[in-house]
Image (cartoon, rainbow, N blue to C red):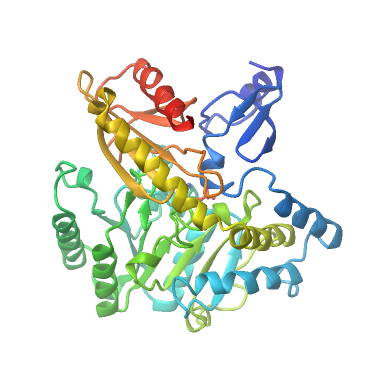
Length: 436
Ligand code: PMP
């Protein structure tokens, strides 16, 4: 371990989990270099953030140029040219999800943007309660920790969490006590049934401001939401004037092969949340909605010192240009095809008996492994839209505890006991194959 890592161990908050003790000094494309000069293939891509690759020259140049123009142009003080230029580039992309998403509020992180969406929903509807999906991940601030339902660690020791948050099952078989072979239709019906029960028994529609979900459940198991479920949610929301919020923090910015993962369903969200890949590593997030909803908020009730920072906005605009000019969505489609072909071939091989399920969309792909002797399950995922060479961690929703395999960035969920050997044997071999 390098001296810097030892220093970090002593002085950085223990509450931050870490996949490895590497000290990253430099990055380019899919590669990173440690402070000891070791080159590593970055299988995390910042957990789905650096979709255009580390230090993409166009994005770096845009940020550097902005640094020399103005770095801090606080939006509560006046309009920022970089903010406006970013919005001009972003609005046509938002229109791909719904043309009426014509107004935006920018923030720094995903969790902050999720909070902003709940503030908007409460102000716009005059209602308080929010429905989230089991297995969801929405962040680690006090509000979003209460909305996150993927692992108890995000809330344990911080209770009481914010009240008024209710959860309902996502159409993922593991949440319904059935196996992967059960039909999607069954899972959709079951999940909608549970939602109806929730609205009848726990949070009345007149008290419910919003239903929020990830169009591809991320940390909860890498599960694409069936279009029929999204359509069912839309019907419920329309019937009761509840807002439908899609958290595209992880699934957005092209990672699933379309700009937004909600697009293929044809469902129009009332609020769309973006972050992570939108500025390729600079802190930028936001929510998009209709002007008429934003207009229900009092001026001054939203905003923050760094919200929509000028340098982050310049990087965000450059990301959109790179996505278009370098046809990144085409690359997602090609790499996704390659990855799925490989995974299905792997499943047909002798080692394939360990694979219980392969699922996902684009480069947000989950593989669920079962080790018969230990009853353990592993899920891994792939992430980088530009290169297709990354992976990010994921775990099963029902797992009570997990350990991470640094080399593969897969997580080994252990509903029962399982040794480190499981990851050592399985994960590196799979990654190695992926790279061939
Ligand atoms: N929502 C989703 C779907 C996420 O995946 C994440 C981050 N993993 C967040 C919200 C929170 O984003 P941040 O870490 O930037 O606060």
